[in-house]
Length: 501
Image (cartoon, rainbow, N blue to C red; front, top):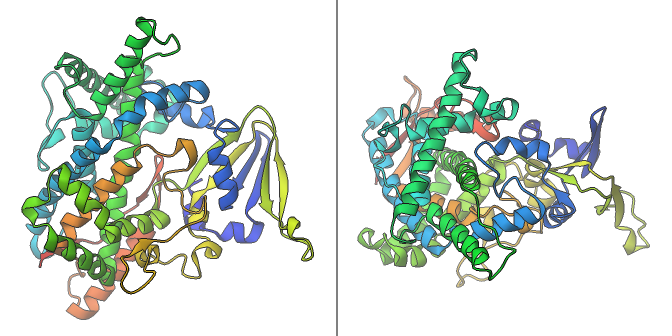
């Protein structure tokens, strides 16, 4: 489905909001109608996650992202408490610390700038996630790049290899990858899986050995909820309750990493490149940041209280995230499948009777077990939904003022129009986590610095800077699906220089 990023909405302009690909293996329906997309995502029992697509994510155990039915309800009940305001405050503080160190390292590069934006934002996101997941704080410059005692591979390298080889795990079980007759490259992937599982097992043991539930992190929340459920069943209070097994805890921790590491890192990297390419939007965001900084000096930015007061005011920073996700979101399609019974959906009628308002839509029956793919990229670039500039990166589109004296507020979108975190009961539970992390990084980056593209050697200042901005836009547009997320193909093609204000 990687074709949808390049195609945008073109194929649906030609074929309509829904078309069917007929193959010997079965039919696949592709949808780009917001109403239908919302219906499919809300009716989780009628449109389930297809096992053939999600089984590959059970590398370390079943998890919230892969299960259906009652099993999903159990996972949801036990994992939902993990994402709370205490975790958001923790993310705010750690993202700020990591962002400060990351940008400081960039400013030291001087005129040549940095070409490691993607690599460094991945390090930042991993450190934030490690802190939030396990309560382990690392400095940006070192952190999880060090090999821990009893290991042969760093936490970062083991996780990175597992994430980048997620398709490999779909073909070969991880236990087979370490066999002596396997190619050395696959043996290393198998080693990464063993190492990462060992890291998780050590962190789980440390969590259970600590004073009862004294910590605030995702692992402690999972263990707490799971143990409380198991205790409730053991005491006879509720025999229907069942805690998570260790493998299911590992599976959910891996799912958090899969959903919250590369996705957030890539969104931050895309946004920083785009802000460098569009200086007018940098100035627009900085205007808001300066207003907030006037009320909250840097010494007061850390801590739960500042998160609660500052984060809601950074609307423009969040608008930058939304606009980046609209055009360059990590997920370009969402796969579902009709359940074991036929399903009926309502579509716009291409030939309505002008004298009968009831004929504006028509019902379509989807046969049982038919694959239904929601084309997120087409929904996010539909000119009928977003206007004639649907393909233009314009974060100002997200905010409006009802009057000159009112504060800016977000526009309302139709149900199913903007779904970077999916929709309905299976919406991504880490949505707020990602928003807080992204906004905190932008707040730290643009409050004290300006980012500009580095012109090619020999280019004059004026012409060179404009050409460099065009090259950054081309670099961003030259993206594609790698493993399972959208990424820039050559993120080091153009350097970015950070200048103190």
